[in-house]
Length: 576
Ligand code: ATP
Ligand code: MG
Image 1 (tube, protein in one colour):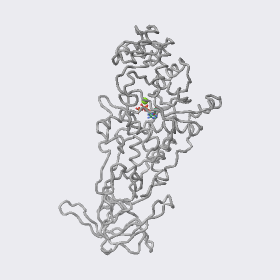
Image 2 (cartoon, protein in one colour):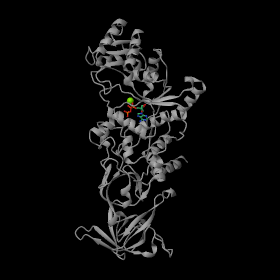
Image 3 (tube, rainbow, N blue to C red):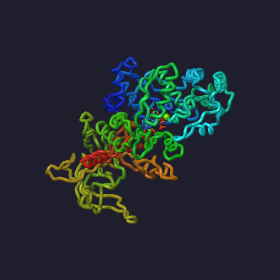
Image 4 (cartoon, rainbow, N blue to C red):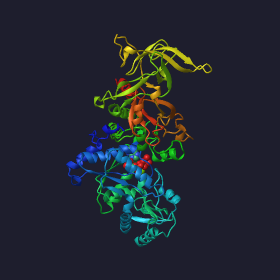
């Protein structure tokens, strides 16, 4: 078995371009902050599979640690037991590793801090900074006020410290039902920042946790957990996405009101990618409602989907490097992601010939009992990849759309009476077209070949305009091939029209399955998950999940057409 991925599997060592977070860290180091330590974390909630947006955060956080000789923790932010599972934990670990990053022994779980977090909450109560509220969820919402009107104090806000401690202990002991009480920070119900209007720190939830089981029936909220988890782990720079900017005031408030180490929260823009969605909530729906096969469906923007589609870790890291890290939200063109994988596979993927929609060609003057092997180049970009032998015989397949009976002017491929080159083989000339008398469909072409053109060049210097790929019929491997288009028909499916749901923009033609493809025999040796190029057709990947030796299945990773180069050209022109 060949492993075509081996060249792209180098450790993640790209030197990332600079960004505003690096400037902040440079200044901190210069000022001697944190004793010169840089310690980041990637903090996923295990409530879904990771997507390409998470890859941005992973590359950022692990990249900073790498470049500043620091550390990066993997921390599961698992405080909502109703949505979390070990399946998600395992998939997240596999994906981070596959991307080329290593958290060594620093695998942490917010749920491991539950006892400590409870103690911190008790400290806040003792300091008069937190209280048990017994309003209902609806009442709490009502009392909170709006963007334009201040909130009002809960009638329970002035409970005594003793009463609060007693109630909070009894909440933990399971004496109350869900929603009967919550623990709230006592901050300011008139704060212009609504998040600061006595935010909830703990809620009662009689739900078993995938790690702590039934040990707890109260669970800490994100805003209370995250800052303290960062603090416990000695995180210096806590990078999160822009939507948490209003939460920073609370992040700082909690840490300022306890005697603990105080990390710095820094917000950066989340990745948005055209023609797809990057929200776990939406991705879960695609899976659960059966719009896609699974989390790792090759159309999904998940790391596992991209992997199955044939994306390499290097291509995703390069993509994250190219998009950079900024303060303002933007939409990144899918064509850039495709450009990155094309660039990587161009260097590493072995070339083969495969015919997706076969049309039979009979070479009339080639002896029926003869066959020969012709030398083909494995990768023109990498001479060390060498050559291979491709079998040739009297009956071949070519691509159906490489022939036209009545070709327009600019069609240079095969047509009646016309001579073209078969790649690495011979010049052939079409002499006859056979059709199904009933349907009129072309079933077979008859051609003659010129034995003097072996290898694909004419000794008399005559030229042909078309070069076609082909596969010898009797040597061909039968295969299924899936071709993909964008999952959505709308550039930004998050912007929905009134009364519609983002699923209204799903592309009904996002996958095309071809069941009768003919591949050159060398492809049978490709390992599951292996990348390759089918000449002229694109980069493909042997499906790692559903392919078997009897029934190979390939996914097209990306076509050979570089739409990104076109976009850049057009932008340049517009800027002029
Ligand atoms: P989603 O909106 O997909 O559910 P999330 O933020 O709820 O994402 P988490 O598991 O909490 O998912 O995310 C872990 C980390 O990845 C967080 O630091 C989060 O800010 C970051 N992250 C999530 N989505 C993106 C994105 N699109 N671009 C950049 N970073 C992201
Ligand atoms: Mg989140």
